[in-house]
Amino acid sequence: MAKIWFVKEGTFPTRGHKQADRSVAWCVRHLGLAPKQRVSSAGVIGGADLSGFKAEHGRVVVSIGREDEEPATMDWPQGFYLLAIDADTARQALGFTPGSEPI
Image 1 (cartoon, helix red, strand yellow):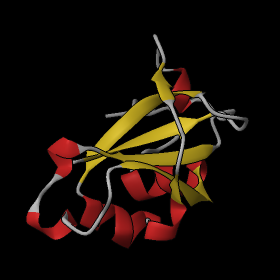
Image 2: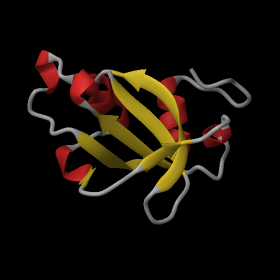
Image 3: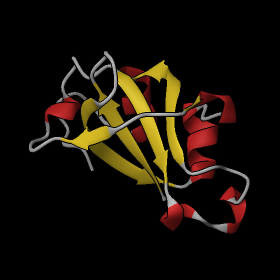
């Protein structure tokens, strides 16, 4: 499963918090994940709390790692993908409602 992070705008490394795990295919369909969004050097450092769910974490990063090598994702290089959508759009796609806890 790919990991979906909400992160603060700024230069990398970026602090954020993992919000969800979804298949790469789900991320393509619902979040607009595309190969051209891969960033060559990005570090998403896990936060010690759930601060990534807050509004100031407005960017969305999907990370694909070795553990995500399912048959449908073999063409996707491992790494970080900075999505074109904002975190509010991703929250809606993930089914989060205002005040709900991340999964």
